[in-house]
Length: 258
Ligand SMILES: [Zn+2]
Image (tube, rainbow, N blue to C red):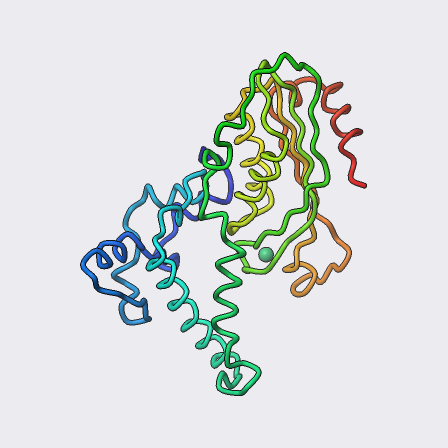
């Protein structure tokens, strides 16, 4: 599912893109050794597996097979790094208000990125149904909360998803679950939009899929341009929605954000 998007930057990443190979930790775990990543041993976890890097942009969830021990290791590692971040910004991590902050921040970051714990096929399960419905299905105004992969700060807003069934429909609540899987990862809005559309395309092979997302990006609001009221809109149109302007307009008028 790799296409011409920002994700390519990741796959071509050099040394500055460090990925921890938690498979190694799992192996160590089998040998009853518990490892915590530190700055000095981080290199051994630099990921040489190019396939794995590419998978970041598709629906293979990187943390899907985590055991409790691996999860605990992630938490410990991140907690220690957050403590360093506090020191680096000039704070005192031993003052009362900050004592538990590194662990809280680590837990929050794991939650914000819990989309890596699931892949779309897990979410869909058996929620695909044979159905003669030919009318447009739209689920609109689904809330999304994601993290911009360039600054690790939130972007959030709403997404509307529509498709024209072709003998198969998808459980309605599953559309929101697909959105959740992809938005709870490090993202750029353009890729998120495309991934949601492609996931629905793959799941039910409809005549067309349309996805439109409108978000406020905290990296624009709080820093840089400081465009407080700006919103970014992205859309992905597949099949009929791309080729037939009537279908596209029907979707856009029905899905208009409230
Ligand atoms: Zn950003």
